[in-house]
Length: 514
Image 1: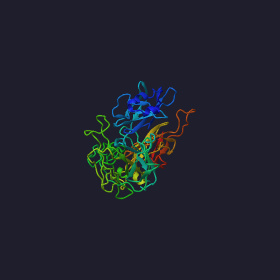
Image 2 (image 1 turned 90 degrees about the vertical axis):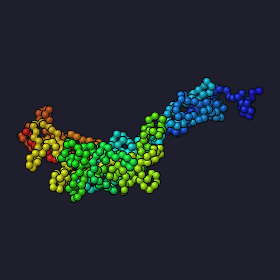
Image 3 (image 1 turned 120 degrees about the vertical axis):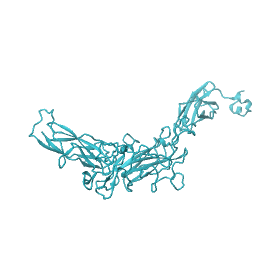
Image 4 (image 1 turned 180 degrees about the vertical axis):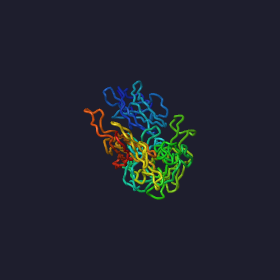
């Protein structure tokens, strides 16, 4: 008489081998949870035994092993028995190394086996080297490149509410975006806050809206650019100004000294509207920071996924808003007290696998020139507008350019805002056109969005005889010479987010068509 399974289970362990169920007809992979495990996270794999009738088979002992040895990957338990009713046995896999790992698990019953899909482990703690914070998406969601917004009118009056979207991106040391990370923001001037949430989305992005408002940016003294800024236990090593401001071309008067050898001295000028005020570009350079929890960056020289004692790392100070751009914290500057000791601390001289990591973004508030800013006078020794082509001649100076029939040329002039910053240009159609008197037309020669902001902008536009030399019938003639003049209106868009438009007129160019 054949013993039933229930009877066999009651027999002593020495007899149990004779009561094992028959081999299953097939094995199958069921599922994996979670589908995208992070490094150090446990993922569960389930397999099912099927008998010859196509039904789940309970009581089958399944052994688990990796298809090939993978460093740092563990399987637990290495074997399991299928459940009653479902015929399912499961095991758990964890990758404990700090590097991306991929493993295939084999479930085996004697000579019968089935393999799982490749299980890839990626993602770990937020990493300071992979933490970015930029304003203005110009190349898709999460990108950045809007470095200036129009915040002042020509009288230096604040235009509140000019806004731009800023995005912090949080990723681990392998570059994988981290979802659900809490990100905090602080700013020197204006306001910054969540537009929807300050928690990163599925690709690791956290978006906020930045707006112009009180408080105003700190008024700072002119400085000197250096390629080797101080980098010690209390200094971050940041440049005095971001490279998109072209500080390596700085000189005292960038309009008069255009194309001259740079001195690296920050531009500066007396303000003709506000007596006693000295304007320089960084007066309106606003610092802001994003802060989250993560690990300090390190160089994994032996590729083992963890920092070893001899491997270089990036030691961070406590987060702070660098109002005066000197690379260290000063009294009255906002900071985050990471260790809760009631004061700002610099670098602690050791590698921190868990700390507050932070990144800085800077943006310029710009205005546009008043008539008092444009020409050199006793109260305005440094103008912010200068005609280049055609060059001024005569007394009083005039910008003259005589043309032949069907002629054309490119006019150009230098333009800066009252602080020697390029005016914010955030529209695809921004540039100079129209504004002519006489038989000429003016077209935009240089237009579009600005990506960098030197102290001055070279503005250009084309002037040509309005008649078409290829016209059929031929273009009509007219008595010559005939006078023309051009004062081209140049458009500047304050922000990509519903930003207002500003018109600044070019210097007048005049002449005759012979």
